[in-house]
Image (cartoon, rainbow, N blue to C red):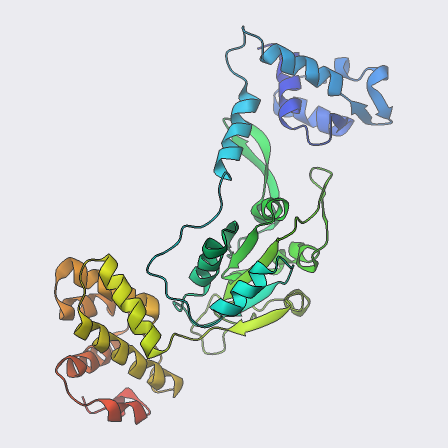
Length: 377
């Protein structure tokens, strides 16, 4: 390929300012392609101001040549097509096993209002925080983009940055700006795992336009855009050590969320509905087993709340048990496999408690115990 055409094609693929380029950026592009100083491109009639050139006519000519019959492939079009396919439809699928509870109805009102109202949802692991947001969006036919936050998440991950596509360095827009442009719901999942790099979202959390310094584009939030964050903590770290990766988030950052909601586990009656629906999907309905699982989880959670045990059984773990039961056909094996993640003493106590419930013994008195050591196993 002609060296000049290679440079023009590269600039065409990175044209984010209507053909206007800084001289420094053009020189850097040439160096990245292994080319000599491109003095031929810095013609006086292309100069907009000192150090800035208008290459729009030059890029238009290159595009015309690339689209002619002798061209083998228009790589720019291919790359753009790939990006468009990736964000074609962002409305989540409806989960027929989902049972609404907790903050669901209020969250529905927030999202339906189309208002910008950043919401922070905290709660213990496995109680359906993120699923709730997705299912509200599914119900309302609203697009949502979920971003899983970690301590490594930075501005490039959120806003956008340069990346390799088909062997070329191109700018890829981040999920935050995509959500703003589409009027989608942005889910910042496990936001308390992030670092101070999240401060790049300050202006966005105020509902203001965002100036993308990497492209020179100003992004205006479309109507309906909103930010919903989920976390195990309230952004102030975890004193009990249960969520060791949870970070202390900047107070100015947290202040930009309009409300903070504490999502609890579902009530026993709601949780049984959830378990039964999961059993129906797995084609292994066992009403007695469902009752036993819900009672078992409820006793353990009450003991956890009283400080008698350091672990608990989440709604998500009950789903794991249901699936294990569907695969192996044995209650005891399903329980044992799904509590093996706990330490030996906790695992043994959990199994012993379930065995007593399954045997039909009266364990209601155990709900008043302050620790598993006091429970009559």
